[in-house]
Image 1: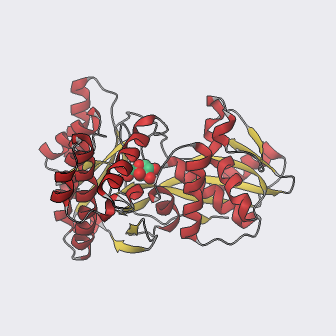
Image 2: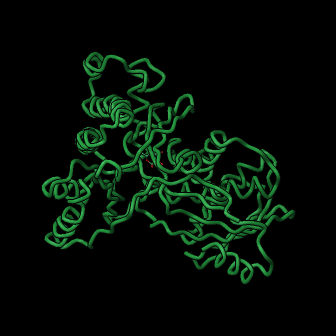
Image 3: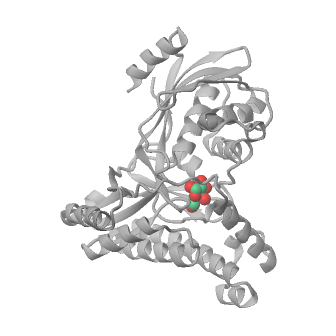
Length: 382
Ligand code: GLA
């Protein structure tokens, strides 16, 4: 892919790139909608991701092209938040790299010509946007000789998505893309930013982790994600804590909240944080099969308390469990995207067939299946 991309860069820009950078997408094992509540998450990086061939420019301009889009976008590095410029839909993808360039400019980076390629399905809830932000961020830092440590770079990429794209995401996706290590999941404390690597090797435990793209495409720039975040902030303020992570006595908190919607949101966030900690304990103890029960509990909580699941996700989990999987849950922000399923390796094929049959029965577009190999985070590849 790297050589092909460098050649394509030559055709597009009439010169060779200075380098090629790659950042992966992610799957979150557990800890959903906890990051913006200052809580815990446990993602791992996929082998699929976004690759960027780039050359430095000193004219204060970013020019971005993508092999997945027909429009080229040229924009000054020095500009207002992209979201305030009201770009038309066909330029929307370029808000991520241009937004990153505008945020990193304050730290000494400048312009670049960028050619982007991706082997991550978009809208599948696997963080193609964070991968694009992180590959761009690494490229810009290297090209302009700026050194920023990776936890700080993750916060800057998150800031670009919040301020430039207008999506109020938490810290998980950018951290996963920049900090993950092969063979491990990343336990991240989203308040302190401290993280540790937790060994995660389903194959060694006789298990397969399937990633099922439900083909119900999600768009988190829509209002539901922001509404959930606002509800969590409102509940935290009513409970007199900085963030829902600080709720220590769930029963007392639920007793003091009148609004049933806020009670459900708090129930999810508090129990999900405990599930992340319990999962880390299980993984460290080598009790990986027991993790299935955590997945199921997380899915029910996301479906019934946080109300972010969608019909294809529920049907996927249901069909997988009936066919002998140990557990499954929706991943990412919700309202579309992917599901993970933990199955005994010997049953994985049967589980996949059962999921496909469930979609067929309902007349839905067949699901996609991805190999989920915990992989290394972002890096320069040439
Ligand atoms: C999206 C956001 C993340 C996180 C998840 C839900 O992926 O980008 O920050 O909030 O949803 O866990």
